[in-house]
Length: 294
Image 1 (tube, helix red, strand yellow):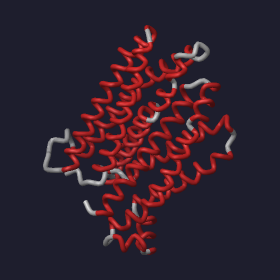
Image 2: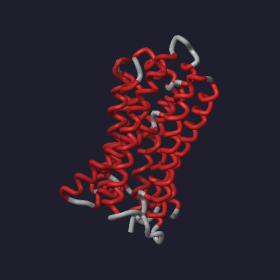
Image 3: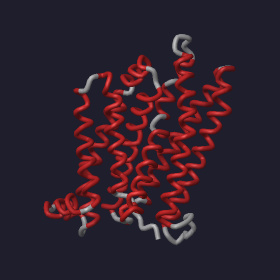
Image 4: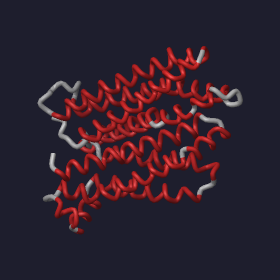
């Protein structure tokens, strides 16, 4: 991997991670959290949201010249307007880039949206930013009905993954509310909602991921001669580990939280581990998404 490809990998990782967390945070707050607590958490996440938005913008701005240098003849093509225009207007990568640029512009405009509607609007825009990833994935190799189904499957996969991964930081922020008698019951209700919805979301992640693997490889990643398949297998192991952590949290630690603070401390640490594993999984996806599968 040359320097331009390494820079593009970093750019993809930053964009994917930022969009996933912004979507997960906003959809979790909009769908799971009552209005009073929702607005409080949204305000407390202000710096995080701004950092995610700026990261998305930086990644979008860097993507086009980096793609031009990778597709073309190196760094010199990153500055050639004709090459940039060709990549932007004549490739599926360019279509995704225009969607992402428009999405970033909409995120910047959300500061003018009413506070009561801004969370839902952020979820809508960040969901679109995530969905745009399907335009640049391996689904672009398929045509006709198969191509449409592959794209829809990829959209379902990234949205479900974001709803799972992105919600975890907000779950961590609920921890102090369990100790406050005024908010403990609300926080427990939110956690139960997340746990219930989590079953569906994780099922979609697993099933859509399996479908994508079958559509691309025709089976499991078993040909270790290809880095794509090695990285995909590693990502599968990471996701299995995340599911194991989620099961322990849901069926062991959450019920035990009523009996004392020890379970809450363990729950917090396990959720941090789950977030760290999710970031590793996103990095692996950004990496093998640049490689030939077979």
